Length: 396
Image 1: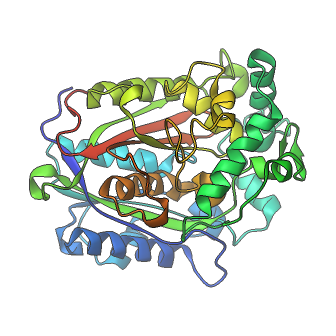
Image 2 (image 1 turned 60 degrees about the horizontal axis):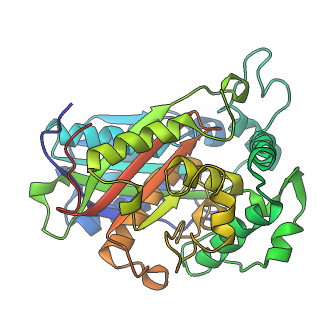
């Protein structure tokens, strides 16, 4: 399908990520949405549709019917307001479908907002809710007692077996992302760690320890998408975007050391943008666990299969490396309010391209990629952004 027109990010807005006892889900969403409106220079009356990414608001907060619950609080009435759920890729999916709607000419201006309020529940209940993104059917992996840490531990162990990946490689992801997050004023965990600390964290699911796992977080992020001809010449354009899916359960996959949904979404996004992996200057990657970043760098074509761990350990993905990954701190340090993560990644990429990332600013920031994963690889959204004219943005 050919796109009728190009689409740009007219405004972005984020809250801090963290554990906020005095904030509810709607207040977080409204803060991010209002920031995105202010950044875009338009008002709520200019928004023609509202797309919400949220994984489990009803389970975490008991509030359902979330899209109009939030859009009306932002002053948007009479427009379509729709919630998208795709596990941790919920707001990535909302972004992709909003992009398609603007590119197809259905709307000129759309707000995409992702939000999650997780810390209002005790950790065992949070774990139970998150397990709903796995196979919970009779005889399924979650019914058998698996959790996402244990599933990604299996992925890590198999990657080690097939490719010689080491615990030090996993730990190097954590050290890098903590160092990056230390520079991010909105990150939940601004804490420098050493390789020794990362190797000796509290065990969670062998070979993963506490430092290999992302955080339980509250937060929200929003973007305003507009037809590019309504934006200024310096607007950040969506060069390519794609969504793909795969089996939910690990035992249904041909292999667990690669995610076909990531590979397929990446192929489609690269094709739409008219670029390849070598054209990407930096990336925000879904490091829900350290092994997830390693596998993603391989599936996105940044390194050869099996080289992801070696690449991070050798500094290739550091801030001053060949391809900086997770300059924001990633989910590991920035935080992971699951429904907000996909849009938050887009916000981080846009800030880098604009040159407004402050202490996080990278030297090379022309074209950036965001990769948002749901579950253990069942959903993936890949988005490529750059200044107008940098890519082709032509074919879906």
